[in-house]
Length: 122
Length: 210
Image (spheres, chains in turn purple, blue):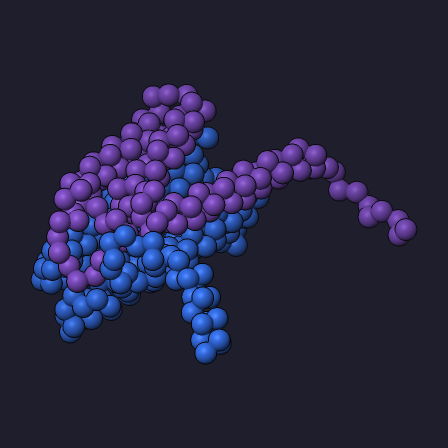
């Protein structure tokens, strides 16, 4: 990692990457952005398949940004950035997928009904 | 005497993390603390994404996602934000090489792309509202403006921060404090780009194809 050859007054525990790693990350991110936009705007694939491909590409792009721009790796800050990121990712997945799962089934059980008089007081 | 030795024997418990630093430098704990703040910020966005996901089809007879979203405009905005990420990276590289002028130039370029992003987003919002797609129209639109607007507000505050850093680097150069602040601002800026990946994918692209 050539980036560590530069002498600067502050010794960084955090990895700060290099011009090359930024450019690689940028190129990967550009491709991973262009493909889903093209798929959605051209409509070459069926809607549901497009949705799956676009979602997978977004997850890959999030990893690319995390590695090449945010410099998260096992060495950065003694591994604490990675550990907190993994913890956060677990909570994020629980919050988002859990909400969708529960609300989807609630929605299924609460089909719109014709207006009814309010139930008699208990 | 015994009290002093008791105090010193307690110390390793507190300083364990810094003694792990094999580089032997006096690194600041601030970037890690700021990172943990950013993770909590990511949780805010997670709740907003969950809300949007649940309400994404609650149109209440109003306009649907497919009718409203202008994908070429979103693609342009995505490009602005992605380019601003790499220009900020160049500012960080110049910072590590001690080039004050380069840092200020790249920061200014990053701010211009950020301004373009916020400008296009405000144009999009005003355009939607002119069509009657206001936040009050449906639960879908309330959730949409809350999620996208919160991201836009973050970018706006990032722009203010870039402005402050331009002044501070101009006045004090690349001091230890300014390097630390630029590192934190960089994490903030790159995280906003990560959140935008979620926005353009789950709000705009999936809204247009599903």
